[in-house]
Image 1 (cartoon, helix red, strand yellow):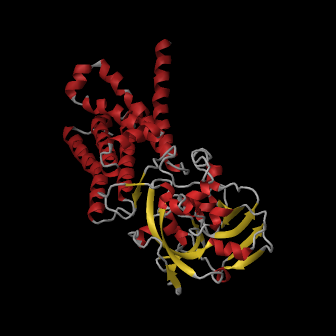
Image 2 (cartoon, chains in turn blue, green):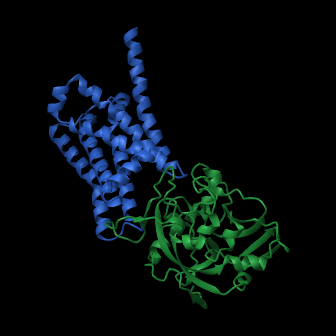
Image 3 (cartoon, one colour):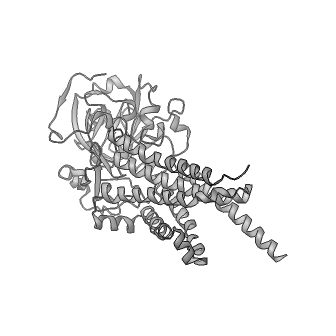
Length: 203
Length: 267
């Protein structure tokens, strides 16, 4: 299959943009119709958090896709995906700070320090801030090799995000385990190819 | 579906009730699934009749009693209670039930009876969640004898003046309003009087997180959730959290049960 031309890529990007807005549109729709269930704040928190995680895994899947199939062009969608991940993470933490805790900073600080699942979630968010801030072409040019090193933080963000979900669950870990397996697979593919490349260089 | 002939009481008369739809669609009842909406969806075909409860252990006459006969032990009362879940949310529910103390007097426990154990239905044919070994089935709870005899403790058979919905623990469940919600065993099939403290399900599942007493206590934090505040179900997205009260606001009636006990250790 031929890679898309400029115009086609533009259309694909526009389509993906609209697709990524669906979870937000759904929340607004349900909210307007008073249909967010018995615990609407928890619903919004869970939904934005889940979508941030899903989009993060999508972001991390472009490189394995290239390694496995040789299809390189989807990597061009990665920045947009990453920024959508960050947007949903922002909505997630805004819900937590505003709707859930009403800017009670003392309570929030206590919650972060005392509860491991909140701490790793918070760490994942903090680590993703520099990635979002350095996502422009200008920053990529300016930072060069350091940009690549900096953006390896995304692996830590992903591991923390999965842990955040895992530790939050009371007993039934089926759902976080699925995300953990997908993440493990995505990281394993990278690792295998990196090791192979190194071996190749040594020979 | 309506229950006839129960008396209203003064309990919680000044509380704003959590809407019926919220009380019956947001439930923790793992025998029917682990998400909050599972119990309402997966218990639709569950038939809680006929029903009998085995009274065993340290009693004069161990026996099995039909639900209809339990209802004759004492007149039914409406009790409006706050219910605080260990996960940090709460509701106000108008239960209909009978004081557990009345059933205990009727059961005539021996002098050896120091604890009451509640064993609930474990039927994987009728309860899809019970096919999954998420918890050590059957779900088991327990109370110390004086807790069980406290006038606040009831066996509920209804809510909002109606027969208890399946997802809320039909046909018979425990309600102990000063303790976290998981103490409220649902679909009780055995009431066993014991000399020793029973091993309860959540203590077995996570002894660091859940204790036998499980009294609502804003000063003892759970490793996962803050217990200082709670979200009252039924509000809008802009309703703030409310402060959690010691013993869920029932300190006057129950604090004496724990005098001299370290509630940090006995959580």
